[in-house]
Image (tube, rainbow, N blue to C red; front, top):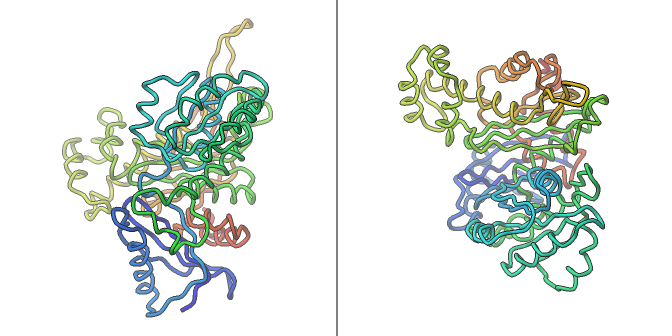
Length: 449
């Protein structure tokens, strides 16, 4: 059997290979293969075994493909530290760009880097260090001195600060420093896209240094990006269709929310530099690795009221259940955890109306990300795909809010039925029109709620 393209998602525990036809016949998702990730030895072993599983699922003995693309969150994913001048300005802009590229941010600093920060960076061993600071032709010394403090660590550095430093950084003649446009060139101007692109390219260039990844390009011929960034890429592609979108991704360890939207026109003056496209990562919200953390977010007596069981009994069941629950009660509790992850993650991602005191008395103004203009919400991730009525979870959240800057409760909610958003985000870098067509097939426009 001949297939046009395979897209591999190399995770920390599982490697998934999705097969697509892009050129021969109709554009379509063909099938999936899976295997345990072999990052401790050579990820190509897990990739090969995932392809063998794909052949088994397709009931074929021979399978050829024209190209393989990939995303990866293996070997710790994309680890980044961010260093800016003012936290709410340059550091925040660099942080948003890193999150949108799919990073796991391990340290954010503002102003001058201290000895304790350098010690932390050495412990984390990030894939990339991001240096920001100063609007263009404004303050320049902090960003430059921070770069000098970190340059000898020989970790890839992306400088995205004041343009006035470019010449003297070039004079350092360090191959591991890359200069891109200022991520915060003017006050309240988030210039995220150039930095995001540079993060992708630096990640791909240096991924071979991660454990077990040294031979990855023996099989993957083109494009390796961070898996969470690929989900944002799919969300951005959907935004071209719907003009205002949100994706909720509930996993075993984290819950990610991606949104692309403009604020209400009347709220624009309060936007305060909120990025147009935003990703939040809730590292304590997951239905397997972090299920105990999620249980603790329920109000006192809430678990007992919903399940009819004591909290200790629910806790015991969760400790005994595998990643995919086997018992009916286990499935019920995982659904409950999934719903809680959705509620908590949306609460943290979405802004709110708050009361502030001004010279003219109290006013109510928007604070945080305004997603009122979102016209479509998408659900992906195993927990939501296998949950009982996941669309209703989102509807329930929207109906319960009084002051949050939420989409209209009647907003359509779609499911990534084929579970291929990340793969299509990867695919969009090379085949955007085919990726868009496959996205529409996966969410099934004819299956609107």
